[in-house]
Length: 179
Image 1 (cartoon, one colour):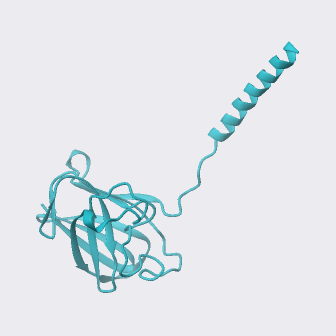
Image 2 (image 1 turned 60 degrees about the vertical axis):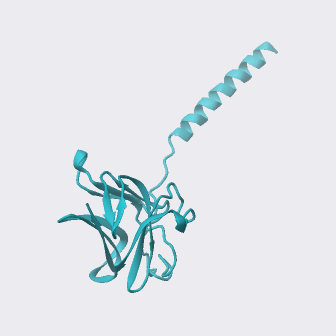
Image 3 (image 1 turned 120 degrees about the horizontal axis):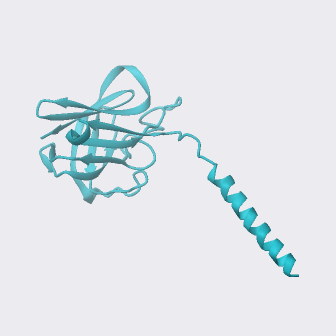
């Protein structure tokens, strides 16, 4: 009986070790909407960075199936887009102290409302609360010549600040931040 208990204990420990190693070797596949970042400056001179998911068109349309017009959108995919300012900035005359924010948008055919919110760590737009809006601005939609399959963001340094460009399909918007 003693040998049987010892054998059972050793077998159980061996099976646990083998199953742990098998699970440790599994990796998730690629995200359908991978995370990306756009930054303004580099290293210790980085003024701002935005982290966002990059949804793909895959034959769908912006304004209907994706980023519906007139509804709060997470401005990307998966988690709400995170904007980190490493320096004080202004948006539409409102001071934005250095810190972390969520970035939401309300898409429209002719203009998009861009909202900087103190809500953090949200999945999608589910945690959006209008009363936590720190600053917002309505910016006009322009149309690009080339269609972008993946939602994209990029900062452009301009005199006195920066523009955060967003594009998807042929839709383009520019959000003006000032110092």
